[in-house]
Image (cartoon, rainbow, N blue to C red; front, side, top):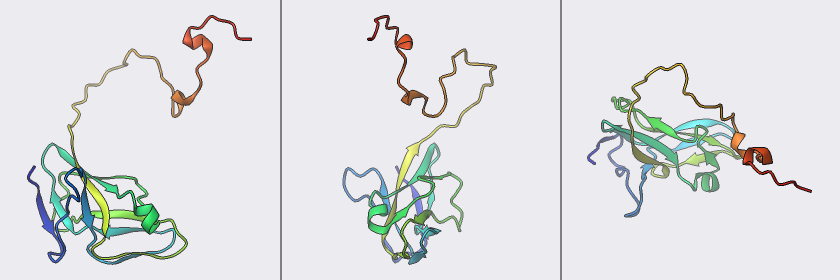
Length: 157
């Protein structure tokens, strides 16, 4: 898939796939960013990407981010829309410092992974019901079912 990209700082490499089997490409930080303890910051990813029609770009934290840098992404995943590609629409990675000390993300570090995902938009058809029973709310499938619901008639002593 061909994707148009603008590097904000051309002295840094393009995002890349580390191995032949990598699905996500690594974003590289454009500048040093200091994150105070407990605070949230945006780390510039040095890329403005024109996402192809029919795709979304997901920004996903690198698995080593909490362990190596004491950083997490408070929103877990970033969804980049197809029309986020203007001259000031640099990909930014939102991180939170979960340590008790300042954390510095240095220019040129790998901060997150990007993943292109095929998407479709919904064409809504409004109905009055779906003729289904209510399944339950959050955690409803984590409960132990009663014997009556399993259809068991054997007595338990």
